[in-house]
Length: 115
Length: 113
Image 1 (tube, rainbow over the protein chains, first blue to last red):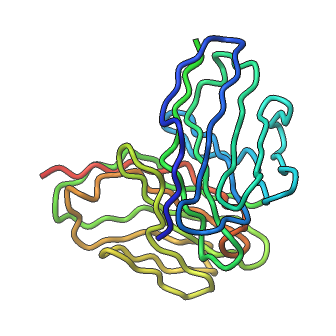
Image 2 (tube, each protein chain N blue to C red):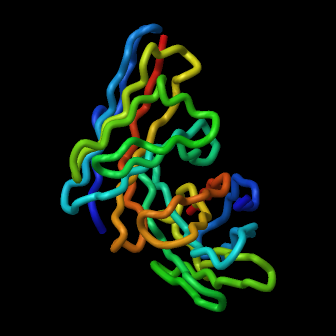
């Protein structure tokens, strides 16, 4: 299967600061990347879908001004949590795919703790 | 809308026991169905999939059959191992690859030696 990495794997920040999470597809060109949020012992909730070179499509209830997504190349997408607050603390997971792939390939996740 | 419902966990079994994790779905049309596994500290991995009715997906001793009449995709394994301990997610999408996935709530499985 394909390899997707995320960086950092965990981050602690102060309330009000911004945090950037990177998602990279290491061995294939990902025309589409997805960002998910996973709460403890709960399922993954899709936040947004981003296509390379286009604006991200956000799911209902996700604030696009708070969760900035950039997909500038076929191997990199970034999620920036702006003015983070404690309720933004969560596990953020990205996945990458393309039309020809059978499925999405998931990164290992980034754990964010906002103090 | 599309949705996936899994049996609630956690599930605890002894090694070599038979495993069933139930999954039912609600969707318009003919979705593709998936089982993903998340081992501790790792990202989700595709375990198996089925793209049309009566298809059987299989991998690593796990099987699941796409049952359109009962809108189900139950995961089974005849003899589980300690290494199967993980969280299992059932999911659907309206296509392959770049299509959105809708996940069930996940079932935590623990296998005791």
